[in-house]
Image (cartoon, rainbow over all chains, first blue to last red; front, top):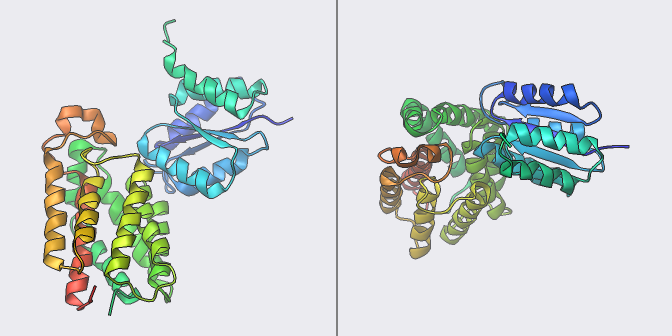
Length: 129
Length: 209
């Protein structure tokens, strides 16, 4: 059984890797990949890295991408367009909490749409309850 | 004769020269209101585009523009990569199959480049982005019937300077709110170099568009 794959796109390679570490520590049955930094590890995002990450975690359940700041969205959208696949979505959600929730939802076997909605709902949830 | 592959190559070279010369200035503009890497990113991307396009003999403007665009997309780390890359890529698609480009075709290419920037950046005019240079330039091309180099450059320069008094609503500068006022938008400055370079090539090479 496959679950929705998840890609973290950050301007910082270390943020993306750190978030992958954080989520995989708790959730092991979801494919999660980090796509942070430029191709030489500087601050920025890189189209090929994102495409590569999508291919790594891809399954027929689809892939959810989470991103940090504006230009990460631009490269994520380009990667999505170039992939030619229709079961890839980009979540408009806080990267860390949204990413964590997405991983949890995916691990429960939820659909791509359900994982997306759960991640995006994080925006409305105060952390102090 | 209209714009040929050779002219596009010269356009890229001239833009690269200006970007390299003004790398520090562009970075300073970006340090004021952004994340301070615009000059460095653009200089790296254009340098790579020069290297990449030196490897091949291009048969058409479209093929050259495509490699130029793809290099910017993969080598410029910030928002400028996808934005300038998309603009040049849309131009490439627009002039596909043409050995040279006339005024009407150049206008269409710019219209499609702007449409690409708007779609990629989800931006509109007056948000202190490169759209504030590209939109007036497209209108300028549409309102005229032949290329006037001096007027084209002036229009681009004026549009770039007008971004100084705008408050940013897109990009990293938007987080600064009213503190973004008083500085020229770095992407608009780079756009000016690109447009000024095209204008200079057309004038110097005696291109009739």
